[in-house]
Image (cartoon, rainbow, N blue to C red):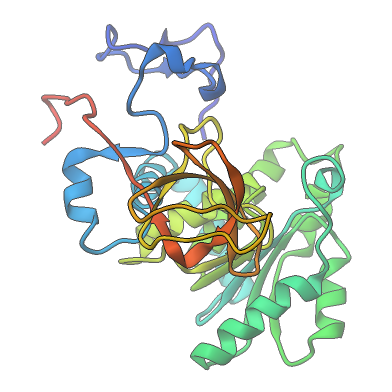
Length: 305
């Protein structure tokens, strides 16, 4: 792992393509007025033309490839990952469950019981068959014991030491805890299916890297709260593939071909959004729309084929 300070490296921009270390500004600070078309969730045009034939979430696939490369472990970290993975006896088929609690509950996200997660795990297992096995990543030290007590038919793979350190604000930001976070992300991304909350960056990160290990794992998840997003992203729009006429005051109407700004998923077969050309906000059947992929002409680097 490498840690640099702000005094090292150069500021991000097209004028320093030969720099070894570049500082990237926080994406939320990049003004839309800068007219940067390749901000998330845009994908390169040349990749989009290929991805549309085999993948259901082009941006997640694109991020997965980048992250797998950026976060590739050095020798020491790889040894740490391999030894811990062997000690925990990780094997497939397996569902990854990430439960983020501690300081996040009540500030950034709602509390979700272990039953809410396991209901989705059971649905996946019953649908596909196979062994009942879960990799449990959490910052709640007592959750593993609770899960084992309530679901004795399941094999739970988890590291209680990681959970204990992650839930302690005094040790959460230590180097050892950073290694543990990397390990949890690595393990979750190796699972066949993930049940988590997309309000957590760990969950979204694992989902993105997961795409690099499968041809198409775009639907290999269940989020108990948010839809997939990237912090600081451009507007997330969907396009209506079927017209809809509202049936009550809570719904909105649109015609096939209309763009709808998506705001969330109600978990009951409906989504929340606004029709762009009318600005009317309401709910609508989720199956009547599909994601509109943002495509942009990314800068081309001559040295990269």
